[in-house]
Amino acid sequence: MPNKEIPSKIEHKRDDTTQPLVLPGIHRYQFFTNLKDRGWTMNLDRVALFGIVGALLASVIKPLLRWNPATIYCYECRACYATQDRCPVGITLQAELVVAGRVTDYDRFIRNGGLKCIRCGNCQSYCVQYLPLPQMFAVMQEETRVAIRNGIVPHHTLRKGLDGGLIGKEFIDDVVKAV
Ligand code: SF4
Ligand code: SF4
Image (cartoon, rainbow, N blue to C red; front, side):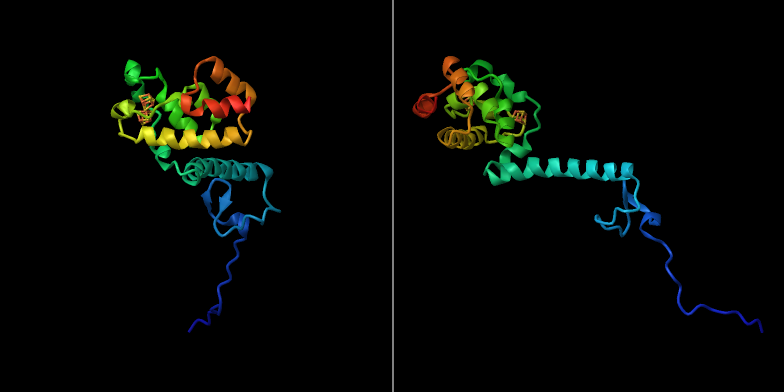
């Protein structure tokens, strides 16, 4: 009978860098902190990956924290621009207001007439998803009012808003006090 030696234990010889790749630059079972044997370009892949994931998360988390979650669902298809002269205050780029609300961009919101919107709801019927545009604009209006009172919105943005007739009567006192 052949006397074969059977190993009592099979050793697993793979180290971190010989594990199969599960994502670009990331090996199976490899910890993020274990970078010493890795090429710097591989780590750049990983940084890029975390950057992309971080940006995606930020675009979702920010509206949630600001109580304006419906802005996440906007496709930016711009079908709402068909509102045209049915907007009683002459706002033509409603999607710009939605995106400004999503990323809390006060300058973009004011520049596109967000502070003169009277929340009539006419544009909502043109939204392909029937998003609650008046409520979304109202949330951002209040955010902007607080930011104006706290001195966060730059003076030149407010001055341009005043000069361009972009400030509604509900907000005019706050804007005049701030500039
Ligand atoms: S809700 Fe605002 S943006 Fe929409 S039509 Fe009315 S005033 Fe214009
Ligand atoms: S129609 Fe609706 S989904 Fe499309 S850009 Fe306007 S708000 Fe966004």
